[in-house]
Image (cartoon, rainbow, N blue to C red; front, side, top):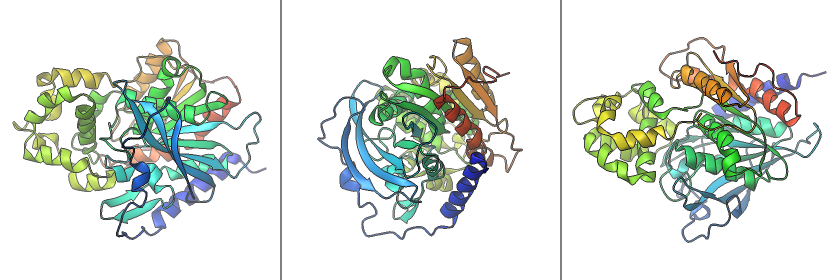
Length: 415
């Protein structure tokens, strides 16, 4: 008998090779033929989780059918907002009993420009246009879920694709987007699980712990949170000077967008290079941001040459609001697996272990899965990116076991 996880690993490898080798789509006269779909200006926003607009797509890989959607949610300030995403349905049958469950997926860091929204790249996977180079690397996992017979709903998050600034790593914004995606996927009538790596790991963990409060009707079976940036202030310090340093700009842009009072504390501290960084990354996808600002030390962005972490005492409002983005202070209402690498280039392992400990201390069921990969090119990201693939089989088995109602072994195992 063929081992289903071994077969799945083969599929993941095949999709990886496809995304690496497929030629980028040439730039067209209009680099975004779907621009009108994402223009939500004047669109009436309904009840959270309601589908406001949809159109069919043909997802790359032919593992299922799909619809690009606009659905309703609520931002951190309580304002109704339209969010884009993708609903995908598999060709494969669900053979594990009961109604077909759904995975609600939070993408990893895509960028801050609207062109970076994953729903815009479900059909091509890779695209080169006048707005830069874009890759929907989450297709690896999306197609693997479809191959298991699972429905998949992928949110673009608030402001990524639709009008407005993408509020990168805002806990409430991205958690609401995930929970309302679960509502849109019928999560009140069938089981759902949250899934994500990196930014998606924080979104998955945030949704897991906010579910009981925000959307108690959802049938949440469990969640998988890989390399979650759960403590924003700690992550800013850890990322400084690495290849992923420009995502600090995404976070600052998002913080000032959602909490305008922080502008007076942040902007005067930045020199011309720092302001240029903020304006540039706001229009970029992740690979272009890395090429432009990767490995820069934040001291080169500030007026007095201090690193951002050393400016915290001069920005008490910004620090307090950044601290509000921390996950681990609420209690998930279903089991969660956190996957993390002790040698992650970008996300401190200790905060992932602490997240499991905090949840368990509050009475939740949480498991720490430790990535086994050794250090690879430190500071450049392999030990942050590769665990998304290395942890996939354990995460998938964890989620499938939750759908089956099995007990959770090794719970609360964080050191």
